[in-house]
Length: 548
Image (tube, rainbow, N blue to C red):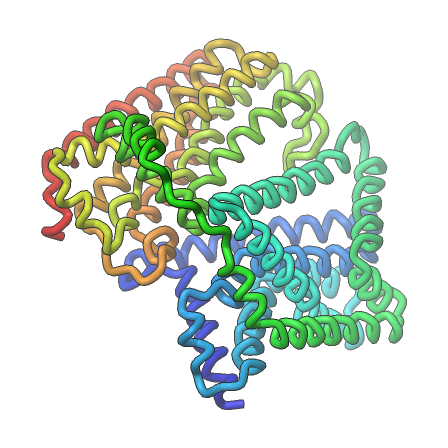
């Protein structure tokens, strides 16, 4: 037991460190404040959801919602963290050489995943349970059910998600570019989840003209949750009907299935990790292929840009943190083009927005002027250049000794990020323009404002990384998730996106839509110019990486 507790403590510490900055009090404080803000916002949203359900007489659906949300949180967290925590370990040989039984090693890692998933699941379920206990039914039995739900709801999803993550990793390992395949599969899966969730939200509110239709939509979602995830139905019957059998079924399956999964995992642990390491070997390139690859590289600048892309796609955590923004921009553009911005707002699918057709026509210009700031927000989620110096790690000597000026090296890093972001925003603007959601001036605002805001923030991050690079990291997460440059880009970009959008709305409301458009274009142009000036200054003050 002592060995189990020590190993579990190590794993929990590693998981906690993956979410916190390293050795920077200011960064730690910003992360804590951002985390508190996000948790508070999520809690407020869930409390409003619970109150809405009660107002429509659907308090019996709250337990199902709480269990389903907790399960979803467990699936997402475990899927992201299982690869690297439970299998695919960088120090697998060292771990397995410890004088500890294999079952203890596997159990400690699974328990750490379960404990973390439970904490995240509690953030999603406790607000709903609090609303139910305060406004619907408060009794010792309901409290017991709520506590068991918070503790056990993520158990089955965590167990299933470990095998799902292994299956995706094993499938990816069969390909020559295993990391790339794993990244593509994971991005597609999470995009599908987001589309399905918002699809449910839109279908629940689509065409609703009164409270009865909204109540019908929420009731339908509740029924789908209970039907698609039986533990949600069992907990619902236990709380609402006082069913001891329902609570027993929920508790028994939440313990038995994870225990069975743990036994299967520990018995096949060596085979599972061996399957992930047995990747398809790439054959050696012929002389002609090497010559062709060299010719394709062309100039040193192009070769460095290609190197940046290979680095990005070769490190899954690096790619996950810097590629979602591209997907979100395209999803937003396609969704608005297919459904229509007006139809989405009139449907009531956007919480807190309830307007009629006449009201929308009166404020349509203000709404369109807010659209570019959504693309600013998504664009800052693609800051691969901000940590491109530190991510080189122990290989930084390669660029440090290259007979090239700093302008070329840093320019390649910036171009590898700025060009695809600009292309993605341009495609999104073109899709919106072609579908008639925005006019030519609105499309120009999306492109100029979106790219200008991104270009300013990513150059600030790159400048920070050049001045104080971190080459001593042990895992890419030290740079990608806990790095100060990334934090500056993300937090500063959020302030820019929300602040700029708010000012755009105020200006459009008081001075007219044209003034709002001028503001958007002006901020985009100023951001692009300021970003270019920052980049030039960075190139002038930058010194060799070896001096850092």
